[in-house]
Structure formats: structure tokens, C-alpha cells
Image (cartoon, rainbow, N blue to C red):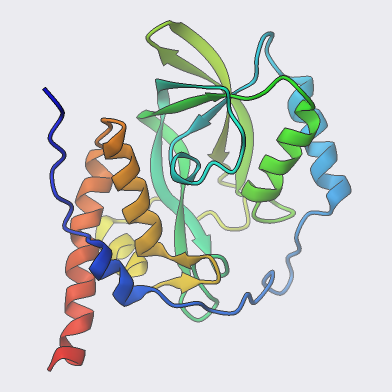
Length: 235
């Protein structure tokens, strides 16, 4: 029998109330984006630690619904010792300096179900560099590449993941759910809103049979926040 997916409280209609396009303010004062040479050097260091065999990439958030990379195979997987958390502060992309947003990263502790993508064998340096361009938030990055151990139905594997660095410029720490919900219900940038990011992630995880209890709680809280913010407009 097909799996029945429960209805999300955070609907596309509620997300649309938050959607807006903000201009990209660029890096905050005192920070900068990594140069192309720095990103390529980082990619070379990542590949120097590459395990034997194909390159696998661990997807736990936006890489599930917007991978932007060709992949040859997908496997459901579990990362023990890591969990999803909205722990990166954003003042661009899905937030602004006036209304900062939040993004997920892998933080220490717990476990995280996701997908493993097998990348093509050709030109690994170019593929990893493209990933770094997408995922690296600052010259002193908060979202950093790391090879981690995954469990799959065919046995363990090593895969590349992006995990949070507490030393990163945008690390927000362990925020309580109400603060995260208030932020995601209000923040948006030139890539879209925090509510859209959460909605897409929960929806695509559910499509793969993955239910993250924390994200499920958050989507309901964000839905309530958006309804509350919309009340004055309806009055």
C-alpha cells in the first residue's frame, strides 16, 4: 500500500504570504566572499582526504530539492552523530541585515536521515568546487566540507557533507524553536524566504519517507506565526 503523507500546516499559500525578493546586500562589513583561487584550494584539500571509490554526497536539506549537480545514484542513508539544525544566521540569500534569516546545517549530536548521491567520476575537482561555490557562506566559513560516515541498506560508506563550524562567522548556536519560527516566518532575501526553505525541505523529505520531528514541529509553528502576521491585513 502507498504511504499516506500527512498534511503540512505550512502550506504553499502561507509561504506565498512571506515571499518577496530583496536586493542582495553583499557580504556584511568586515567580511568577504572567498576568492575563486581559495575555493579551488579548498576543493583540492577536500579531495586529498577523499576515501577510495566513488564520491558520495550527503543531502539533508536544500540539496534534496535543489541538487544542481548531476548524480548517478541515490540511496537513503543515516548519519549518526549529526542532526539538522537552523544554526546559521543569514544577512543575505534568505534574509537581510534588517531582517536576518536562518539556514540549516549539520550540527553535532543525534542522527540525521537523508540521501546519498553518487557523483560522476569525471572531473571531481570541478564538481567539488561547484559545491563549495554554492555552500560556502564566507571567507571564514560556517558551512564547511567534511567526510562523514553514513549507514545505508548496503552497508556503511564515507560521504562528503557540509557541517557547521562553531568558529564560523555566521554560527547562531542552539536557538529555541519559538525564535527559529519567528525568524523563518519573517525573513526573505534574493533567494527566497525562510518559510519556503523550510516548506520545501519538509515536503521533499516526506516524499522520500523521511520525517524529521524537529522540522515537523517547526513547520507548524511557522504556519502559526505567518497566520498571526497576516491577521492585521485581513482586519
